[in-house]
Structure formats: structure tokens, C-alpha cells
Image (cartoon, rainbow, N blue to C red; front, side, top):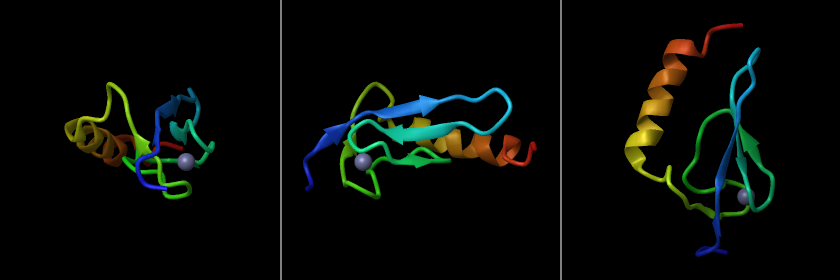
Length: 67
Ligand SMILES: [Zn+2]
């Protein structure tokens, strides 16, 4: 339900793209998200600043094609 809070866990992988994991349900995505698409938890923590999200998406455009 809305109002649930969780933390966005960043799983860094040296040889592949980072993953972002919902601490509430374990949902993983290749990009950071502010609200979990599976359980609806709002990501709460020191990195909830939207600017950080934008920066990460920008970085993903630069480095996303490495493979
Ligand atoms: Zn979730």
C-alpha cells in the first residue's frame, strides 16, 4: 500500500551493470526507482534526492553500452 517505506539498495557489479533493489520485497531493476513498481514502497534514505536519480540516469546513458 502507499505509505510503505523501503530503502533502495545498490548492488554494484564490477563486470556488469549495477542493480537497484527494493529492501521491502527484493524487486531488482537496472535503474534506480523512487517508488517500487512491484510493492509500491517509497524509497527512503539519504539518496532520495531527485537530483541523484537524474545523475544516475545520465551516467547510465554514458556507461550503459559497456558490455
Ligand atoms: Zn518493493
